[in-house]
Amino acid sequence: MMKVKKLTARERRLGRETTPVSCESVGLDPAVYGAAVRYLFDRPVPEKSGQEWYWNIDEPAFDATPLQWTHIQTVLFANAGTDLAPYSDEQVGMGLNHVMSNNAGNIPHMVNDPTVPLADAMRMVRALPSLWRDCLGPRLSTHQSAIGSRSDRLYFVSYMWFDVWPSFWNAKHIPEWRDAMWQVFCEMLALPWREAQVSALHGIGHEGARLKRYEELQAHLDAFIRNVKDDDELKDYAQAAARGMVQ
Image (tube, one colour):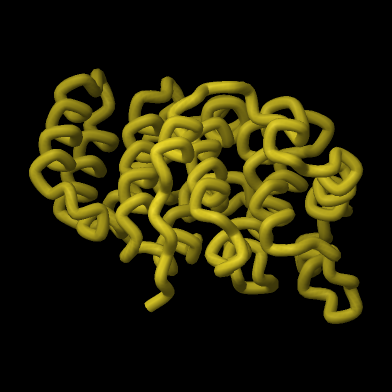
């Protein structure tokens, strides 16, 4: 098990600040960030029988350190609403799938690298709700469907993020990670977008026990269920998530 340096009082204080996240605020070269966004999202959508670009073994890898990739993701999550606006739903889904899954690369493992300070990792995790608040939630709100029934790339990313994302799994033994993930789920459940709530519930169903907040989690989900109006499917899904029984 990797030993992790505890956050200092200053780092905890910085973590509670709510200054806008930008390349400048995280110490990332804007040119590197712009190149990373183009690398991930400025890609043609394959034909129905084709494969995504990242499965091409001849595709060059993006040259960035684990800390740079952590900063890239931080800025991307925090500013997805504007920075991904030029791209289609399919392009966004395709690029985010590469970010969240290790099926074709190591991007989601970068934040777990020993060279990445815990404070930087936590800043990245805290930016996650903005991805749903400003990008995934609004894009997916135009069409409500049964939970888990859609197969398009964008919905897959939103629904499956916390199911396949290995970053928290690799760091579940670290208290700061557990606390940060708890805050992510709470913030997402409070968003007005149903698909953000579904994604959080899906994540809680798989990872809730690892948060080690059993009574608090149950109380929070009970309150969430009481506030859901005219959506029995969402209520049932929240009850299943509380029991760890989601697919």
